[in-house]
Length: 141
Image (cartoon, rainbow, N blue to C red; front, top):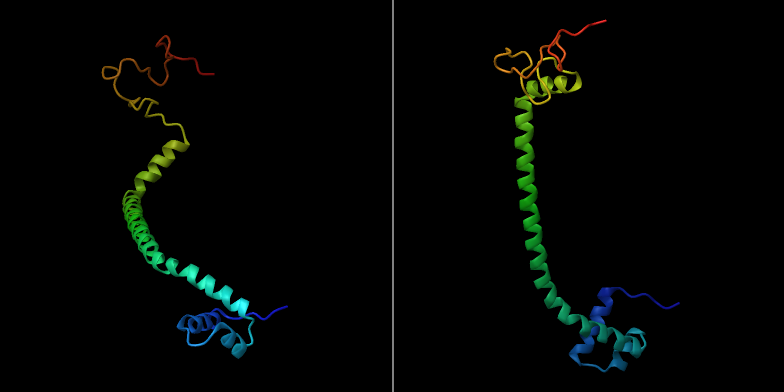
């Protein structure tokens, strides 16, 4: 199994190759690496050079998307904070509404009208002890 070299070491050798002060063979002999390996590292480095400049453009796009996401999240936090504050302020209403939802109400009908309203206001609603069909008193057993 061969040696594993760090990225810093590889970059240092590729820099030496690009300076062209020494040949590939001289650098390979000085560091105990095969010349073909140095050629491969140089090719990888030259292939990756354009990506170094493109990443800045991609980074700016990512930063803009991140800034937009942060703005959206802060807006959501604001909406939720307002909602929680409203719920805390109107907590008693929630208790009353919750109690109404858990048990049948004798006061409110399903369509939202007051069942205790006088017959002159809501003539189509039967009274509590009357049958809805005939408006006669219901028999309770």
